[in-house]
Image (cartoon, rainbow, N blue to C red; front, side, top):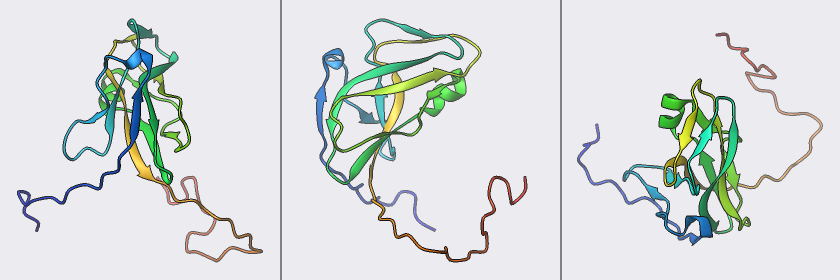
Amino acid sequence: MRNPNAQRPAPHTIPILIQRAPEGADLPLPTYATSGSAGMDLLAAVSEPLTLLPGARALVSTGIRIALPEGFEAQVRPRSGLALRHGVTCLNSPGTIDADYRGTVSVILINLGTEPFTLRRGERIAQMVVAPVTRAVWREVEALPESARGAGGFGHTGR
């Protein structure tokens, strides 16, 4: 059993260029909430409070632009606290930011809850995970190799 107080290896880091968009000029840059966090918190760069009615969605700027190194992507994911407490989550999740995208990072939020939700400037709205990308190369074949599962899917193993 590993000692929970033992020194953990330092996480792998990569430099990422970041620029503040005009609407995010006074907001903090994304940060990891804890030393073990996989995702950085993204903040709402709204100029005034934004109320999402139940069922409503909105594109919310984070006020940042990034230049990821080739071979990496950034995944935009929901925050579990917003989803649990308010029913607010991200559509198109996880959203992908490609290495060649240079526009403002924005998040599509939707209120799946039963009450209106008001979003204020600087609130944490999503998290961003930077991950390596593996590119596939197709090799067309006449038949696929057999497997124990075969073509079973969509609940084939039962409830």
